[in-house]
Each structure stands twice: as C-alpha cells, then as structure tokens.
Amino acid sequence: MPKGKILVTRSLPGKALDRLREAGYQVEVHEGLFLPREDLLKRVEGAIGLIPTVEDRIDAEVMDRAPGLKVIACYSVGVDHVDLEAARERGIRVTHTPGVLTEATADLTLALLLAVARRVVEGAAYARDGLWKAWHPELLLGMDLQGATLGIVGMGRIGQAVAQRAEAFGMKVVYTSRAPKPLPYPHLSLEELLATSDIVSLHTPLTPETHRLMNRERLFAMRPGSILINTARGGLVDTEALVEALKGHLFGAGLDVTDPEPLPPGHPLYTLPNAVITPHIGSAGRRTREHMAEIAVENLLFALEGREPPNPVV
Ligand code: NAP
Image (tube, rainbow, N blue to C red; front, side, top):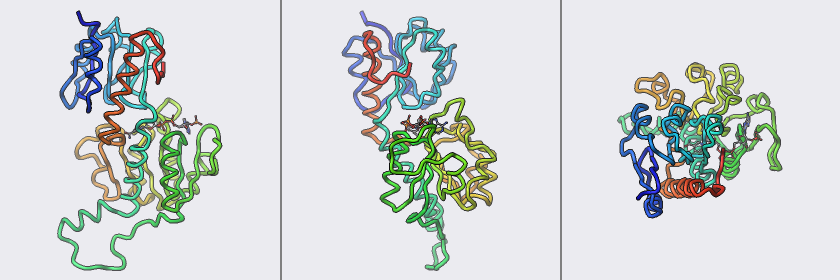
C-alpha cells in the first residue's frame, strides 16, 4: 500500500525521484513540456506532496484541489509562483533549492553580459549569414569590460557570485540591497547605482516590493549606452518600456527571464539586435539540475515525515 501520492509536474534529470519510490510513495510525473492549468488542477487531486516548476502557478485553487497536501517542494530558489499566504493558512509547508544553483546562474549572467557587451550573437549571425567579407577597425564595436562599473541590484547569493566573476574581468562593482552587507563594494541607493553603472544586473527575488522595480523612469535613468542584464525574474522589468529604451537609450539587454514568460514568437524584443534572450536557463547545468532534484526530494521527504526540512520558506 503506497504511503501517498506525490505529483511532480515535469520529468527531472537524475535519479532523485527513485528515492521517493523506494520510500514507498506513489510518484506521478507529468512527462510533457508544459502542464496546462486544467491538467494541473486534475492531477494534483489526492496528492500529499507536490514538486512544481517555476512555470506552475500554485495558488489557493490548486491547494484546495488537494486537501491532503502537506508540502510544496519547489524545484527552484524563487518562490514567486507559489501563494505563500495561502499555503501558510492551510498549514502546507513550502520549500525551495537555494545555493545549489548560485554558480550556474552567475555563469549564465556573465554569459549574457559578455554576449551583449561584445555583440557575440550579432557577430555570429553576421558571419553565418555570409556578411564577413573583411576585417574592419569599426566592425561590431562593443563595450570594454575592463574598468566598467557593474551595478548589482540584490546582493544575495547570486549577486555576490556575479560580483566575484566581474572582478576577474577588471570591472568595478557597486551594489544596492535593502541593507548594506559586510562586502568590499560600495553600497548605493538604487538611484545612485543607475546613475553610475555601465551595466546593471538584477538579482532580487520577485515580490510585491520589487515588481516592476525597473519601470520606465528607472530604465531611462540608466546611463545612456549602458546595459541591463536580468537573470532574476521577468516581472522586475517593465517590458514595454525596455523595448523603447533599447531603441536608442541603452546599448543592449541580456534577458534570461521575461514578462510575459515564455516570450511569445514575434514579440518586439526579438526584433532588436541588441537584445539577447535565453529561455530561462539560468540553472540549466546538468549537475546543477540533478542536484536541485535531490534537494527538492530531501525537503519533501523531511516535511512528509514531520521533520523540519533543510530549506523551508513556509
Ligand atoms: P538571495 O540570496 O535571497 O538574494 C536576493 C537578494 O535580493 C538579497 O540579498 C536581498 O538583500 C535582495 N533584495 C531583496 N529585496 C530587495 C529590494 N527591494 N531591493 C534591493 N535588493 C533586494 O537569492 P538568490 O539565491 O541570489 O536568488 C535571487 C533570485 O534569482 C531568485 O529569487 C530567483 O528569482 C532568481 N533566480 C533565477 C534563476 C534563473 O534560472 N534565471 C536561477 C536562480 C535564481 P536585502 O535583504 O539586503 O535587500
């Protein structure tokens, strides 16, 4: 007799789910690329545990379909897709996977930063499209990183890992967070940071306080010819205003996350050569993603066994 049903909303890399099966749980995995809302509402029925991805909106309606639900073990560090208050009211534990994805996400942040600053994607398309006929001193000029100022918004785990990497490239680092941290970088207000940074990189969680943090006014308060990088959450940026800012004010943008997400085909951002967009792959290193699955499963098992999970949010 299985101990109870665990719904996993996507297949996960590695063997972490075997641990749940071995522990006697009935593991139901949705195998598709995307789980439609109606299917989520149906499949969650009878579940005592849920492992959702960032794309599944886990709100009161979902929770009420599974009155026996004890734990939502997020396969992410960000928890903005879960209604935490609704979980709290129902006594459902919520956990996440902090730390394990810090380095992979910082790596992708640098990948986007380099790609935008040095016009790597434009250059690759130029060569592949047969336009490379000669070397020219003014061909595809970009931003020099040595000596450039990188402004980090949200100096947590990922922000600090990005700062370390930026130092290796000779960049000056400044940051803003709600409280200054014991770090060897100047702590500025957001307004000061925008006025002084050549590159602004976003690393705060998405909360009601940070929603549209980069609104039209702040995007245009960035230095002319500067770069915006967002590997945190799409909701931090006013997309429509960003499109405008990219048509002259900014040098470019590197976005791993967008609003809306996924960014639909034909969206104006895709038409801009100075926007480099990746499909939310910040933590997508194989080892990292396997490790995230192990941590999500560990959190889930602890919560189901009535023990304090290693990475609690609620
Ligand atoms: P973290 O360690 O909690 O860092 C977040 C930082 O943001 C904290 O240091 C916090 O500092 C700061 N912060 C919060 N509210 C702020 C505000 N209003 N203004 C300025 N700073 C603020 O989290 P993390 O592990 O670095 O992850 C950060 C975010 O990255 C996650 O929440 C997630 O959404 C995103 N992420 C994306 C990917 C991806 O695939 N692209 C992968 C991993 C994570 P204070 O408390 O001092 O303000």
